Image (cartoon, rainbow, N blue to C red):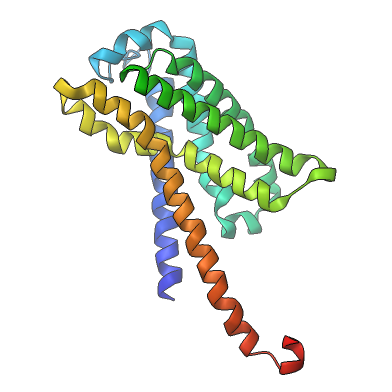
Length: 230
């Protein structure tokens, strides 16, 4: 019961963080941009020039990534996925397109990212890994002859963890913004930490699930008659 309750709480926080940042992005880069909050006015002064120079890529990246962020958690939470398989498949198509657009535009924007070369390489690497995880997940489920469910699920979990870097970035960003003298090196570090930390957390979750399956299998076997165990 305790474990189930804790899982529910974590799912709520997981989904809530994604929806919050998605709505923020839709508002700042969609509904409010240009006529109420000019593009780039809400970012650090060092980033405003890049925002004004790469408007098209900013809009595509922000809107596509926000939509993927809103969809992603529901795609990987088993309780929702199993109950709404048709919705899972349809939403998955939208998620893939949004991640494709978000990763390509993100790699374009990384070339003018803050944080020096460390920041540029960090964000570009995020775009590459994000794109590859979606391509692997897509190929593993779309083509019947090579369909591999476990690979599809693993790749999409990686993709969702990378999509969630939008949330991690905004959790970490105040550290750089509040230290203006060291903004560039701190932002360069955040360009890596905002997505690698998510992958580490995902790896820990996988290990915990693996250990949990090892402990439940012997317990289930002990409850079976001897002939069934054999």
